[in-house]
Image (cartoon, rainbow, N blue to C red; front, side, top):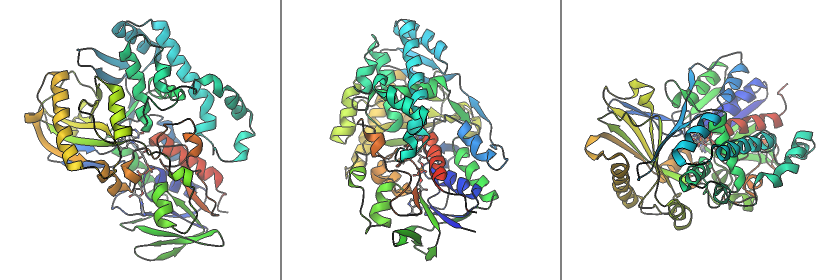
Length: 485
Ligand code: FAD
């Protein structure tokens, strides 16, 4: 039986391992940590459970599809959410955004005094962009000639100039009269770690994923997503070697021969790296000529997260909550240009105990409090954490009219440095490279390599970061690999 190694048990690595197993390979996953899931991990602290990484689950059918390969069903229930997000501004404006286009348009029209027709049209365009481009940008390798020899792709390419990629997302979103609605739709740039003032207008397709196709909550929390993939892989015979760090990808005559780890050397017929593409080149194959333009791409934003056990319940909050900055352009300038944090940050609060009461003691809530942050460029994170904590508490006080400081029963903090340490993501980027230029999609590393039988999956390669895209990247990669027989 042909033998495949997967480097890393992140969501991309787990999905690739399952797909290779389905293709008949004997698969071994090497993971430096003692757990599977990478960024999709969780902790328990003082009676509270916290998902450490992703909080938004879209396109659950990609999870179903992986299980169906083995005639299995996803072993957790997931429910679609009526409300996509609760939005708050300092002047008291609140908007509970329905995750359904016509309801969204009606309600947003009332709250923001914007013609319903404009909002409906925006959401229809978002859907149109998504439907037109998904076959080109999300489902196939962008780097194979065969991709461009198909009717759907050619149609998508012909339509690209009409899709609003000439300006930035912010300039596209100026279509709204009310700046709050522009700000709300600008926020979708952060779904791939970019700035709305730089990322192209085509990113206005992202709202369709959430408002059109729906947002979901997995019972048991986001951690169930990575755990169910790990459990399935284990069940179907994928071998896991935890606490074993890969130190090199070995090759001869430009063909992969195996890997070395901090334990020993192994021979393999095929290797798939789920490690961030930057350290894959720099650390695992320092002698291989690197794709300079790809590795020099600006990294996506990172995050600073406070996990707070809160001794109180807040009926005005939902599962996803956003407290908007009063000055969004300056906030992004701080993150992407000054590589620092703005004093008036946009604060995201995710509370899974709203839907899974067992995640917090009775009468309490588990708050995941996140602000977008620059990657780690050697800043003084101790100082930045201290200052941001004060700024976040002040922001919550201004918006919700409550001082949460005395309500914090327990605390855990994750910085960009921690994210890099835990997962090897260069500079702690959440989504690999940023999409802050028109060519970003084409500059992402392909899912294959110039070295024969070496492949790449996960958030730092095509088609990009986030759970759905990582799952799609494993599918694209597996489609490039022949069956083992
Ligand atoms: P990773 O999860 O980074 O996994 C890589 C794995 O490889 C790790 O387990 C690492 O330990 C292992 N590894 C690395 N080097 C080696 C080596 N040399 N040897 C062995 N093992 C190695 N996405 C969403 O869809 N929705 C969200 O709401 C969302 N929010 C986020 C919030 C935060 C705070 C973070 C951190 C991320 C968020 N994301 C979100 C992004 C999402 O988590 C990632 O895009 C995705 O999980 C990346 O998966 P991956 O498989 O590419 O890599």
